[in-house]
Image (tube, rainbow, N blue to C red; front, side, top):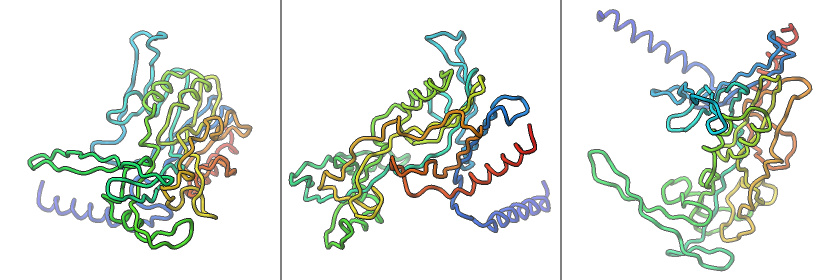
Length: 336
């Protein structure tokens, strides 16, 4: 390759970067923001069968996040029921998004509020809960460094989760003179993190159950095991059915600040009244099966008009979902 060709390539690359920089971020920032999916029933398609589409919208990387793969038993039986293909993530058993011989499904992020910060009154090696001093769980983690010395990190935890103020400056600052139940305070507290992703879960098992499901009931049974991260699952099958199910652990808790949504502001960790009280029952999570209009669209938008159960107040803007719905409506008006 000549110097002139190299220079032309550099110019083209620089021009491409400039074009990307000129694109307004609109309502989203960063790479791979948002995800889209939709499913329509056979009454809207040329084949007369459902049509499902899914764009997980994760950023491009090398190596790639998604791997096209399959899981196939040599002989399908009760003991080995897998004949599925689609896309998975490195290190994840089974197919995350895909189809088998009876059903197909897609994922987008439901994005409920599943993390809470707790202010912790820590004195030495103890922290306060309901007037009682409990021992802080402390352990030293050793991080191996290639070509360098091992690094040791002290990890402290309370019953709520790891003490994040030990390692993140902005979180540590949030524990300095924070408002308590909406009232200014002069206290200095450590801050711990409660997150559903730190709970023991069965998500890997859920993926295998989804892979082997043959109908919506079995699909829901698999989804019920999917703990984190909470997703919008769209569904279609060879019988012509379409559906939607939102799985995942969503905490039940009370707001520590009057007028604020649950978990929106840090809660006092020394008062167990603001601890999580379990999970939203799976039966109460949003779902749909063969809706009258034959259309289901998910793009991280609010999936329920009800505030019960509480999922979040910070849904993604609905403009992507609306655009998908508008385009589908236009094509459906034209006929299959």
